[in-house]
Image 1 (cartoon, rainbow, N blue to C red):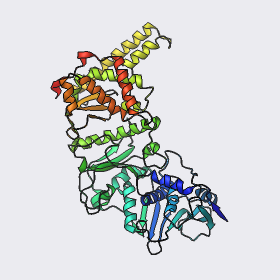
Image 2 (image 1 turned 135 degrees about the vertical axis):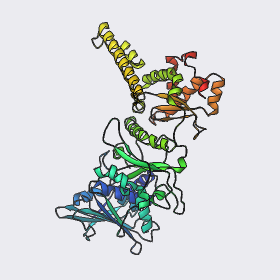
Image 3 (image 1 turned 30 degrees about the horizontal axis):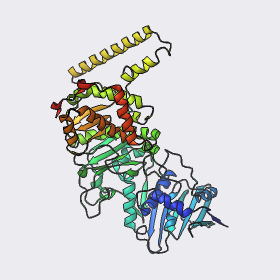
Image 4 (image 1 turned 120 degrees about the vertical axis):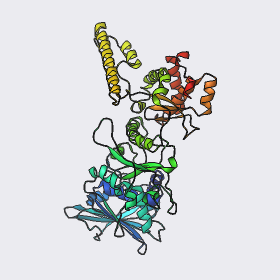
Length: 524
């Protein structure tokens, strides 16, 4: 009996295709791998047969029983759970309908269950499929085989070299010793093997030996949530060069830090990191963070931008920044004016901005994870205590005791910091909140400023900064730069210009502080 998918499947598939940044051929391959890995496969075998005009992917995952295979042909059907896995509802096989003459899927779902189907797109509104006899394409006890048949010679998917390059490009961490040993072995305990036309994919030793390996920790956790590396090493026509998008005959690799989750590369570049090294074009690397899957879009090709997921993403990004900053400094790729001396003269502005952001926290909760929050006796807490003075049943004496306790705690911390300075130990960490830094951004002289972790650097090389000094408007210049920097991190549905207007309006209600907050020109 023949069945049909009764929707405009072609239109849906084209919309789905357009949601990816990569070419369709690459998307098909990456989704076949991603869904196989989600099914707990440890082995994937690709066969690219130009003579027979078919591409086959066979895995040893959980497989599907007959009813599951039937649901598999429903474009809207998926048992995927957000934050778990990297595939999307069998999209690899479904998108291949846009290129294929027919698609044959065969699966062994355990307990002797075997089933196979043939599917084709005959016109935009008809995508008939039917059960067919199994052929034995799945040689494992359990697993799934997807065979894409082409009407004519396919210039990419039937070429072994293209398949190999695409697999390595999009799943580089699966083949890298450091990333596998440091983090992915906890995800894929039995390891992952991928072959193309019988050849096991491995990285050459020259690419396994990279510089500046690091691990990523979230907060005070002792177990790393991720691992990665950064290198300036020029890899001659290797997989890493292909990962970075360079042509095979180019010896230099493109810039960027790639982020991956469960071995699948999601983004490459420096923009998502929030850091631009001085020699960005000479650096490349990869960081693998499995937990990032929690903040990915449905097709797992980008980050979600609603407020709740943005807060999570900023926590992950901040952890990555903290991990790579020592590496960048050791390479001479990040550094500038001494933070201690520079920030002394802008502390008053920091306090004003802190109070300003405290008033905006309800409308822009996504900034909380980006900046952290100052607890205890900060300006926001003082205002809240004045507002709710008697609601908690407290008395003036109670508040006096709390103030005395807070004062004692401050004195204790100050004494501890003083002792640690004498002993040559690291001083206690600064409390969370926004820090301002006046800095010569020699790597980006045209930028007004940039935000890294919880610090906004004001570019003292920018002509606007120099003009603000001449007109004694440096405080307002700093506020505008801070507002523009923070506006990049608000939810997309909240317009950045609207945020900047509210930010400046809220600041004006706090008070400018006049000459007391003037920034010293000697910092230049």
